[in-house]
Amino acid sequence: MEATCSEVVRLLLFSLVLPLSLRPALAVDTFSKGRNITDNGSTLVSADGGWFTMGFFSPGVPTKRYLGIWFTVSSDVVCWVANRDHPINDNSGVLYVNDTGSLVLLEGSSGQVAWSSNSTSASPVEAQLLDTGDLVVRNQGSTASLWHSFNYPQNVFLSGMKVGKDFFSGDEWYLTSWRSADDPATGPYTRKLDTNGLPDNIVWQGNVKTYRSGPWNGERFGGIPEVKTYEEGLFDYQMMTSSREVTYGYQVRPGATFTYLVLTEAGLMRRMAWEASSKAWKPYFKGPRDTCDDYGKCGAFGVCNISAAATSFCSCLTGYSPASPSTWPKDGSAGCRRRVKRDCGRATDGFLPVRGVKLPHTHNATVDTGISLEQCRAKCLANCSCLAYAASTLTPDGKYTGCVMWSDDIIDLRYVDAGQDMYLRLTESELPPPSSPPSPPSAPPSAKSFPSAVVAGAAVGGVALIALLILIVIIRRRWRPASSSRSPAISAMPVEHPARSPVLSESKPRPPFPTVPFVQLCSLREATGDFSKSNIIGRGGFGIVYEVNKYVTTSILAN
Ligand SMILES: *[C@@H]1O[C@H](CO)[C@@H](O)[C@H](O)[C@H]1NC(C)=O
Ligand SMILES: *[C@@H]1O[C@H](CO)[C@@H](O)[C@H](O)[C@H]1NC(C)=O
Ligand SMILES: *[C@@H]1O[C@H](CO)[C@@H](O)[C@H](O)[C@H]1NC(C)=O
Ligand SMILES: *[C@@H]1O[C@H](CO)[C@@H](O)[C@H](O)[C@H]1NC(C)=O
Ligand SMILES: *[C@@H]1O[C@H](CO)[C@@H](O)[C@H](O)[C@H]1NC(C)=O
Ligand SMILES: *[C@@H]1O[C@H](CO)[C@@H](O)[C@H](O)[C@H]1NC(C)=O
Ligand SMILES: *[C@@H]1O[C@H](CO)[C@@H](O)[C@H](O)[C@H]1NC(C)=O
Image (cartoon, rainbow, N blue to C red; front, side, top):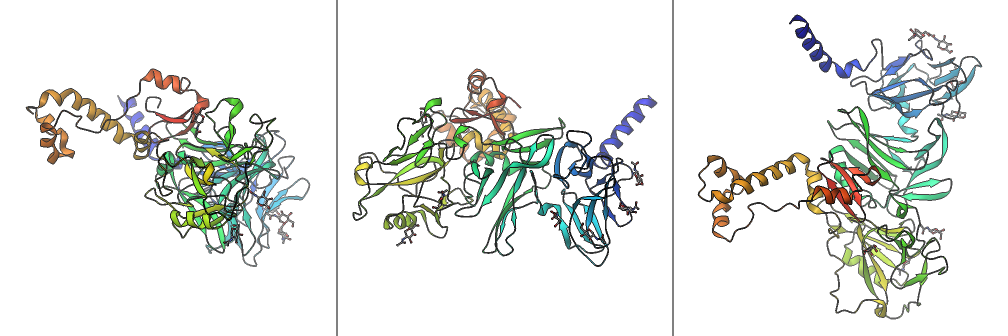
């Protein structure tokens, strides 16, 4: 009896002090001259939540020591490494604040400086590990930072960091991969924000582009529309575009779990989010997702279709034919050429919509966010060198506006679920006969690709959908025979549309609520390859999102 009680009390206490208990008893988040961090297990732990820890670690060879910052809950996820390119070869490392305001990491045995913040100050400085994971050096008593680690992003992109360019100072912030999973040294991959045209994230291997997120459309990066299914519950994008800088970052929503984006040593982008219940990181996003995301897979004027047979992902845009017919389409990298020269004197050109794509690279494109899509069409038509156009901007209510026009290679184009439309300039003879209804350029975005009910459900959250499903089941069972409405529970049921209940009962029988598509478990299993991990492309508010050939299906049952 007594033991049970104390057990309960202990459990209660444990859950109450859980965030604090992450912190070792003597942990502090700030240090200054006179207090050193040495390689004997001493650490700095951020205040408030204690979410981040800084100390010495070895990712691989135990004799190579690094000073790093990691998630307190998961020391294997290291977010930042001070001496990534200068490991300390023994346990003599010491981090201290020197007399001229620098944070210095010294290899004690050799006296060599392994890393330094290079900040300078005449007055005393202190260093603090913030609960965002940012290590800040500043004058004691001041809030302005002299130096902070978020200004030096590495492979992990945290909430509150930013990447991009400052055109005045010339500063550029970008991600760099580790060399290998156990070597934090600067690796071959970088991910930079391309600020020419519309902002776009490009992963580079050395000086070769390997992957592009798609242009920023005002809401998100256009090549990964599925981000919408989890972004809304997790974080807000923060894009800054001015004459001074083009940068972007994201801010985790209050109360949302930890999340981070990482550029892996293999050049992959991954978004992970911490699942407290299972104490594990869950993958939300992986890019490139498939071979069609490989930059320039189908060359100039080619388009990649991941649903096509493996040897024919690539096809040429209408009006274009393979530049290298002998290798096409197995190797699409040579791209396509125009079949016939356009005659610019004649104003008979038109536009063919290419539906649901990740827009081509806009690096050399002309952007005008201030005009409508209709004006964009006119502007493109009036300029002979304009080869295609598309909307530059997605408004918060889901409409496309603004203008981006291409006048050189259309490169890195692919079909993508819930993608945008691009309008390809063609001559009159190349356009489909007008008998097929012409699609107005201002047509709403192709919404066909995402099963809308499913995505809406994911966005709104599982609770609502599950509640709705339960309601439907209850109503189907009890509504029909209850036309007399005898049970009070039943009469209370259609509370959402009390005014419409008489209409419902007088009209021909129809479901009292909008129908939700039901999917058989077996067909879901078949479509997702038995819920195969390799088909997972993300996670929504209530389940895992699988890629099913061209379609994205959300499994309510799998989670
Ligand atoms: C901190 O480290 C520096 C450099 O090794 C050393 O000069 C200083 O005495 C150390 N201070 C303390 C309090 O250990
Ligand atoms: C590590 O060494 C410092 C002195 O350099 C000492 O103050 C501290 O208590 C030691 N920490 C541990 C965990 O032994
Ligand atoms: C502090 O460290 C910086 C960077 O290593 C160095 O340039 C400076 O000379 C150091 N100051 C002192 C007083 O040692
Ligand atoms: C500090 O200065 C040294 C020498 O100029 C340089 O090698 C090092 O990269 C600088 N460190 C930082 C963090 O900028
Ligand atoms: C992609 O390929 C599949 C399979 O051949 C085809 O059904 C589909 O229509 C293609 N998509 C587009 C947009 O052409
Ligand atoms: C942009 O133009 C430059 C110079 O003509 C060319 O080298 C580059 O490939 C073009 N980039 C894209 C993405 O079209
Ligand atoms: C037509 O487009 C090209 C490429 O964007 C641009 O350089 C040129 O100034 C435009 N011409 C006119 C008349 O707007």
